[in-house]
Length: 202
Length: 265
Image 1 (cartoon, rainbow over the protein chains, first blue to last red):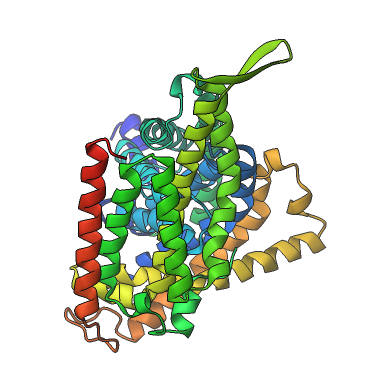
Image 2 (cartoon, chains in turn cyan, yellow):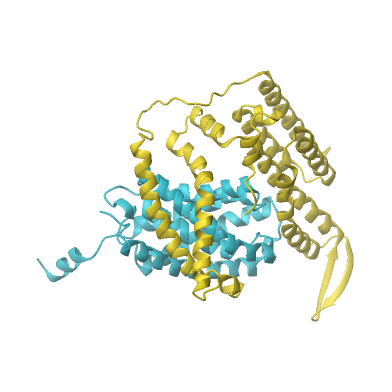
């Protein structure tokens, strides 16, 4: 066997769903453990969002979330990469349900759609990369999620809030700057921590 | 985090007219109300809908304080939207002033548009909150299962409500533990708070995943979702009130949509 082939063989593969890599990313891990674990990640996201959303609400009323978006891309990316699409959807959709039920965010009903986009970006990233615990994969996830979110937010801002989108470009740019860079770093670190803690299984 | 609104439904189950209704009826009413809210931006019509919802909350005996808390959350959004609309709308300028050498124009039409949009957001939030106030989560799970959703997925909402206080308690414990070591997240610059949250996030995630292992094992041992067809302790029955509410909701929705498209509202 050639050296190149040997190197390729030795290269670690960390595929989606990381919690049971023998399964496919769609639907992913749908046993009780997969569902409950995704749910727990979702609840952790809700807990952490308490800190992040305050600043967003204070500055822009939550209309141009920055901290919230960073946290959601990171946590939904983590959930989808660990447990697949169904797990990711559980992580993404429990947050708007709870936020709506508890009245913590007036635009929570829109998070059903915006959060689902982030599952799609993590799923596509899993399809592209053989090893998702890499900088390339997490940066790709951040880029895809940002693009999808901008594509969803602009129609929402125009149709629902009648915002003059052409005058809001600087706000979109600032939001995108954060969501392109920070979640990639956070997700890479979290995935590594979760792998080292033994939650990644063959 | 505010007190969970569903608590009222749990404590006073069947005590109010709307909490006695079938969850599917409430889902239909919710859908119709969302269409009505979206169909118009007329300020007076939206004020009328708000007054109607107020009356429902008062006369149905829903917990007023926790239901209306959502309106307080809308205030920063209201200020932001109204400000942007007032400063960017070019019609009906009522004031102009200089700010750092830039000419700022304030539009009356923009102010009214901003207030109407805010009212619409507030109505959406209030409607959703009222839905979750009167619909018992277990009944909702049952209704979703009857509508064809697999039980293990329908059950996640109930599980989430059950475990959220636990996770929030754990977060508070970790936060206190880090504070005792000199790491106080509340004193961190808000602009970089997200980056500084790792000392809270990592123990919380690892603890939650470990806890999930135990919970999943306990659920599997109790044969969670082991049989394709399951029985329920709670029975859901549709009554004549359900038929009336469904009919009234659909008729009101059709009326509003027709009136709006004809330009009356």
